[in-house]
Image (cartoon, rainbow, N blue to C red; front, side):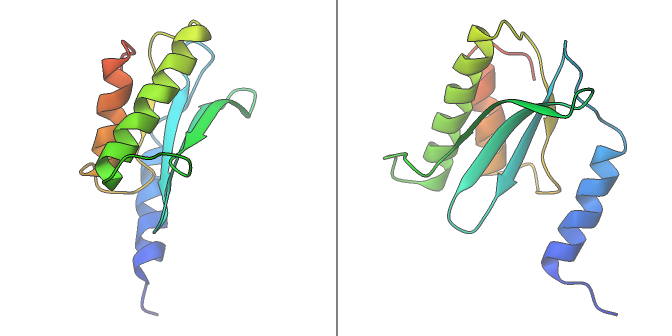
Length: 114
């Protein structure tokens, strides 16, 4: 059986998820990148709840990387309001480059430890 590109990403994501989990003190910052948009969620895995989320659908920035950085700053500000100081980064099986990296940098710019 041949694996599609998405199947390989899911395998990578399972490998990452086996090692990390979000707690109340340090929730998981999960990134999902579709062909058009990028979605970011902050998740407490102990209670299986989403604390905050955002996406790039309403962003007016020109490039995908700029939109991702904007989403990172938005989620960072939301975390500051919720008094969360650090998160565990879950790249979702995607390569840590481009838009995925820009999200992490945007969150760091907001003063959150990633």
